[in-house]
Length: 241
Image 1 (cartoon, rainbow, N blue to C red):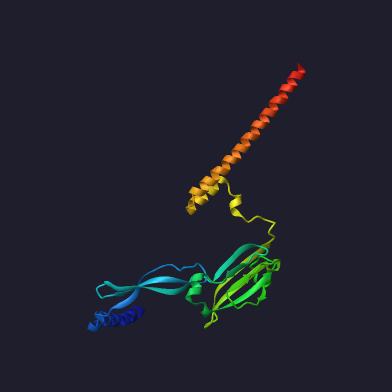
Image 2: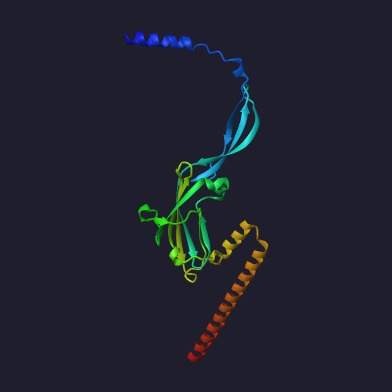
């Protein structure tokens, strides 16, 4: 009985959808769709992507193609970014990338919270921090500025949080650590870095000159030690005889 009922319902469907007549007006309709798109410009928070929009004819041909820029959101959690800043130096950081600011930062609101003196992502430890802008500026930086700053970016229309990012700021004394990265590089590393920057000629001559002075000093020192050792050895031998 069940099989007979299924056949009874199935046959009208086959009969009713067996032939479909497409009106002549629809056969000439041109659809405009996205035929290609890029990935989002950022891995978290608001970004943008480029879409290639084309008109597709009934024959499948593309025409009148244009590039369209649209908003995108991959993930709203961005994690922790850490900075080490010397005391007295001006410093700033922003919730939004330069691309997102250009898209219209007025459509967003910003809520800041601070875990003073701590580098953490534990939301229980954060307290409200008064700042309505997307940027925090230190001018100059003081030791009391150290801590983790959390920024929530919300849509003004929907109050939806579209980005959360943590900024860890460590403040150090100027005489505690030398932050000049170039001074810590070896001669080979400096040459490789200058080669990547395209500034090889002048820097190479300068480094070669420094190396020559270094090795000349080392050679003079070795010769001096050798002569001194020879004189002392000669005196000891003559006394023994």
